[in-house]
Amino acid sequence: MSIVDGARNLAAAKRFYDFALSVEGQATALKGESYQLPSNKGGAIHPKSPDVKKIKLIAYDFGKYGAAAERKRLLTKWDAEVFRAGAK
Image 1 (cartoon, one colour):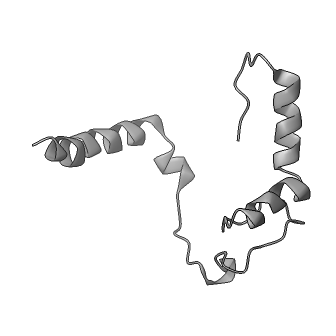
Image 2 (spheres, one colour):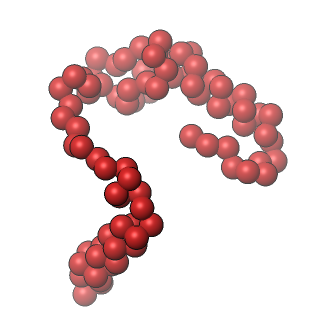
């Protein structure tokens, strides 16, 4: 989540942000059958939510893939191999 710089209703946005990150706010996801994991440690987890202990994560090198040159290389490759291929 984020609040856009220059938001017209900054105070209301901050109140919503605080609510959305609260235990009560994140409990609304349970009622809506939303299975994402809460970001609040005190939030309840829906029984159909993924078990984080069973999720295999990849080793991600933020230094490498966050660099401007690598980003440009990957986007150029994406454009050449995926975007343009789909335009045919």
